[in-house]
Image 1 (cartoon, rainbow, N blue to C red):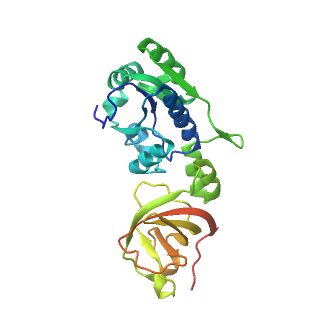
Image 2 (image 1 turned 90 degrees about the horizontal axis):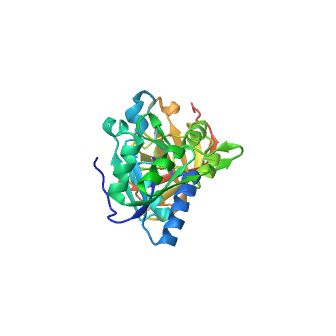
Image 3 (image 1 turned 45 degrees about the vertical axis):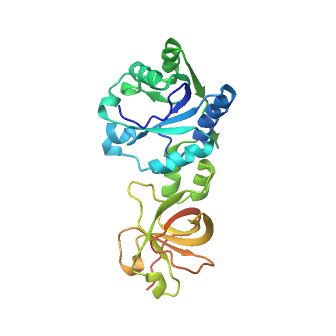
Length: 279
């Protein structure tokens, strides 16, 4: 197993994909961070790349809510000491839950492990949270189960957030994420359609493998060099110009300057309408 282990002494640990680092993840990681503060121990998040589903079920590979660097950044914002990334392989997937926890115990000197009620690891997801409690006790550490966060009668999950984004309901997705959903990419030279129509736009290459909100026009927030600006974005194929590939074009309000080559983050605040063809 190869990973960037950054803790050499005892630590509390939370393991998971943490895609999107939504409010449910905040509950799990936040409880671990608070306990670690009380005990004077590092709080470590342990995540995987690629997503285990990509290895185990490539035919239904999930689109991501956040890239690995974004996940690391978001988890650190909760207060964890470090985030370690394990390269997930078929060999790792075939390990038993006990084998995996023995390795984690040896590598991290784990004092406590945190997971949600549906958390499982090991071959065939045999290591449910209750099974892990027994294994952890035999290895000398406690496994903490965190009850799921429920919103409107439904458990907050990455799957639900993906559904909302694909429906264009970015406001509800933001409620579950705890922030507006965003895409981060470099501004490239485009066809400059907006400039031809009288309003220059920033054209962004959409990051591969990411969940895209439903096609449409959105009110957005744009982060540039640490400053947040307001804007309007068009996302999707451009029927007016006969283009089929999805594009993200953003007009930044009350801004004058060249953003070509800049790395921008566009966060979707509210969907205004669907895309329309103008003859």
